[in-house]
Length: 164
Image (cartoon, rainbow, N blue to C red; front, side, top):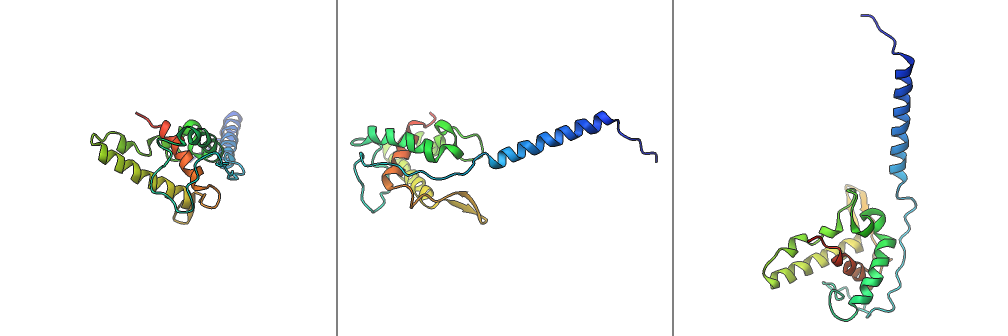
């Protein structure tokens, strides 16, 4: 069997493609940079105490407008790196606009409210404890960084980002 040498331009093209792929892979690996969680000033919100609530107290009523303001900023500081600007995921992390999508289509208001409360509890638990699978950290825990008020303010922001 005769081995035919590849023309120099094929080797050059292959080298350029491999170099471009290496740079792309390195960019993806370092795209999050040095992710340092940011504390959130929630002093202007109604304070909730030490015991964690099961549902978002800022969804309606007192504190909603302020929670939305704070939650928008807190989301951009702590969540957007992974979950995307305006909660629009690029596909690597869950799309938080769809977090409680199963609830929005329920016709029975009581069931819908129970569903939203259950998803709020799931959300708060995930933010507090993070997500680890097979020893890999998919989401860091924020329990000692974000207060209950900050977590519920972020949830308030996400409720405005729900997809219909």
